[in-house]
Length: 441
Image (cartoon, rainbow, N blue to C red; front, top):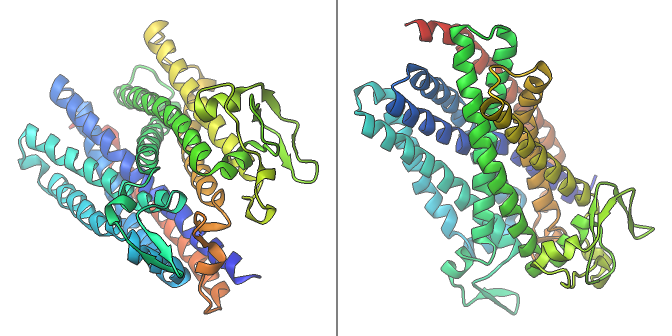
């Protein structure tokens, strides 16, 4: 197999694993913070128990996120030396600042976990707030390198060398704000829906609507649906901004996402189907007339460039249309679930949810994580064949050392063991410390 394909597969696998832990590492601290605030407001012990238990789970996930993130950093250097040379010259700043963000997160996480019973209510909230800020900042700073790859700025290239480097211009590249916003709100959404999924599963297992433990999980479910709903809406709004960024800076990526081959105004939005390269169309799709033009720049008359405007060897893989559609479909489903949950409980005043709806709530966490994976694959694959858009091709950045196939197999084994171990550790801890015991104390 081609070394480039193996290198991309290896790094993609690493990021696919790391993104699970990193996303929950951003999303769970907000849930802990909200539980702390609810406890201080209502003095309801259930919220204090939620904050404590979710923190323990977060600590385990953080313990895995650190080594997988470290592996990703090492692989960047070993697999993509050409890219890291460019990073070192132009966009090293976010990597450097990220160290401080992680330090902030780890420091106040330690304070909250080991000294929470000796902290005043205000200091407990301050500690969790700083953990949440540090986690989000860490994710944003690392993601900023991805933003730079799509919209490089802050340098000139003269005779193949990077000159006139402005690190702050590279840092605040054109897609920084939109990308930072998207990674944050989508992670906060996912953390909330994962909590909702767990709570819904526990409620189905209990099968009783009047027990103390059932009510505990019901509170967690409603909190997860409320916060998840808010951030799923924000994610969809930010997604609209992301599409406009693609129209302005990466038009072939937008064209591939929608399977648009011909440049046109009043361009239709293709929902579903698959892109047929030979026929130059998206087969079996539902088309919404003029919608893509409006999505691209808030006007039905916007001209959207088609793939035929670009050399075919610079087209992104056309399966990104399916990834994009899957991501949007899951986001729409999550918004719908939040609305249905709110209406059922708050508007219709129903005391319990039907079983089919509970299973839908259980699916929300896995679906939201799947959307995260689809989104990252779309974001990175849709930029191909460029590792830095119109500056450096991926094939020019890859290592020439060879023997990457063995590394792929070894890391695959490690990740399987790591993920199984994570599940076993979490399951062991929460089984040994059931919520019923904490409620009765």
